[in-house]
Image 1: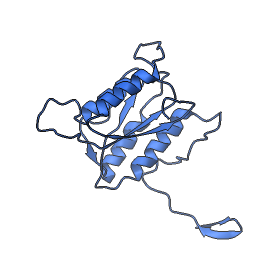
Image 2 (image 1 turned 45 degrees about the vertical axis):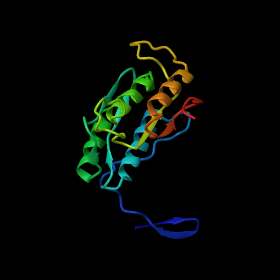
Image 3 (image 1 turned 90 degrees about the vertical axis):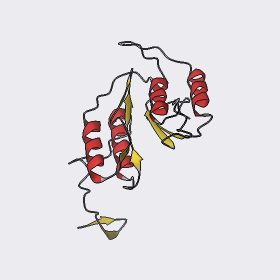
Image 4 (image 1 turned 90 degrees about the horizontal axis):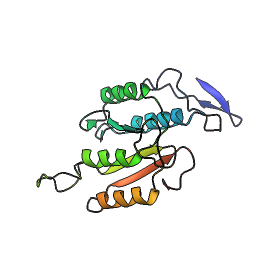
Length: 176
């Protein structure tokens, strides 16, 4: 199949069977749903992982939960399972990113008392968030001081050197 683009016929790539039926990049305009954009971007990031990569997903709002108890290889079966898990996630209004990062560092082995673990089990974290950090109060939440959260992360990460990427869907000096 071909389509006209910039005055020339170009091939249209075949749809990726891993992409949910009808999935398109959601609008990032003011009217676009930020959570849907984040879910789509996470889907695309996972889809691009080579099978030799190990990954996990940690979702957070006023709490934090892992997709799996341990890292999983990025084979087709695990990617499909991750997509289904992500599809069932629902957005809520808080961003207890400190708790999520604490769980991520714990999962990485960074807080382990096991003398045999000399370096973390992972090397990279990617944080998707829509803004400023909040505490874990529920049903209401209070803002947290970004400097306090960043100080804790620096302490946790100091001896390990995990790379932390952030993807922000909103305005956030904190994630910069």
